[in-house]
Structure formats: structure tokens, C-alpha cells
Amino acid sequence: MSRFLVERTVGLPPAEVWRRLTDWPAHGAQVPLTRTTVLTAGPSGAGTRFSARTGLGRLAFEDPMEVVRFEPPEAGRPGVCRLVKHGRVVLGWAAFEVTGEGAGSRVRWTEELRLRGVPGLFDPVLAAAGRRVFGRALDGLLGN
Image 1 (cartoon, rainbow, N blue to C red):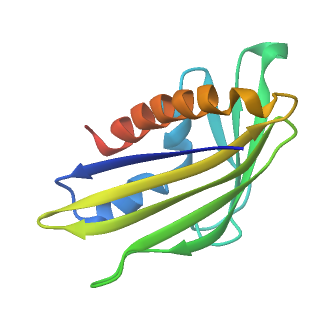
Image 2: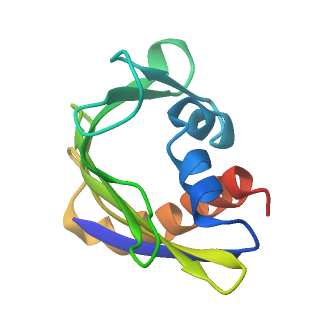
């Protein structure tokens, strides 16, 4: 599995950063050829399921995920969210942490993924691509 980390510091309060990062449909709008659909009702929390569909027509795949940890930031404590990927193509997990830093916030996004059928030899390439794609998505979500 390939693992990568993306970090950003922004001039937004932790609660606003958390709101933006847990707006699951907005994630799809930041990744080309991707649409994110929330599959469960109600506010986001542990147990929320959603799927990101990437590609065009028959050349698309689903990336279903479930939130397994959802702890919004509070005074003196960072917010932590962890997702598990349950797809046929994409497997692994993602986690982000939102910490107040000065007048703004710091975000640490860590992801570990595996593409079914892709040998581990390609993990460094997958990690580099992940850093680039998720870094751009994070910038878009945070307004950077």
C-alpha cells in the first residue's frame, strides 16, 4: 500500500475547516471527472457512507467509503476524521486532523491506498499522484 501525507495551514478557524472537509459532495467537485454521493441520511458522523465515482461512462469506478471516526475539533483538542475505503478498485483508508494554530488552522491529511491489481512496485508513483491530487483538492476545499 502507498501512504502519503498532505499538510496545509490556513487562516480559517478549525470549525470552518472541519465543515469544509466534511462536506463530502464538495470533495468530488475538487477532483476532475469525480462526483461524490452521500449514501446515508442525516448529519455526517461515524457511520456516514458515501461514494466517489471517477471516470467517464464505462471507464468509471466507484470508491465507496465509510466514516469510522468523527470527532469535530473543540477547544484544546484537534478534530479527527477517519474513513475506510471499501471499493473493488480502491482500498485503504484516509484520515485528517484539524488543529487550531494561531488565528487559523493546520490540516494533516494522511492516506494509505491500494489499487487492486496494481503491484506494490508502483506504490511510490501512486503516493506521488495522491499527494498531488489530494493536495489540489484540499487547496480547493480550503479556498487556497
